[in-house]
Image (cartoon, rainbow, N blue to C red):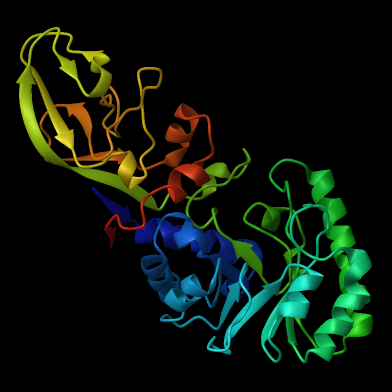
Length: 336
């Protein structure tokens, strides 16, 4: 299944970038959700805490338990409510009035406001009811947040979301006198708001080395590279075929080709005769990718399949998030 390298220098470079942008390392909340966007929760938690990042967010309690082995001050659980045996140090996102009704009492929670994403969070019109329920259930309101739907695409829409969010915050402060943290920005959004107004920003893809708008996209560096090890080598002749469907025909005699231990079973998207992809040494991946292997001309013991997910995303008409998060969690990961 190959292996993944995680570049510590690149990650620290990206963390430096966001520390400068936000004004303080303490304002960085790294997204470790979904197996740290394919990078692995444990190695990225290790790098994060080594750098000095104190806050993280995860998808569910299982991921929170993995992150809790590291010295984070707060772990925000986005999509699961507490059970009786949950650590009291976890913070649980409330995505609806129903969540508040179902949440166990006396846990720390953060209330999400839907300011235009149209997905999760209470509506601004539900704020009074939500705060009343939170107080009745003796929940500890640790924070209030929202999520921008198109911070990398539409500045006007983002600003309107922020205005609605700040208006909602003022309403909540009128109803709830105890202090709570406030956050709204993701990797792109942190470039579009006055970060001095907020306690932190939830940074995911930016820390992993990708930003999606032109003027800043080259200011961060990809952290992950995906490598494969050779399984076997053979010499083929002109007209011989390689891999399923016999779609790739060898162009000349004495063609040296090797098979490597990465396939779509490891989360590397399948290629067929209608799509072409190349290794970092610009060698074509030949024919169809199999479940457990792919073929490349030559006999290198190892190959780097990619160190920037953007190119593969273009090949598959998708986004780099999908290329990264699709990588199998079991692929070994090494910090370099």
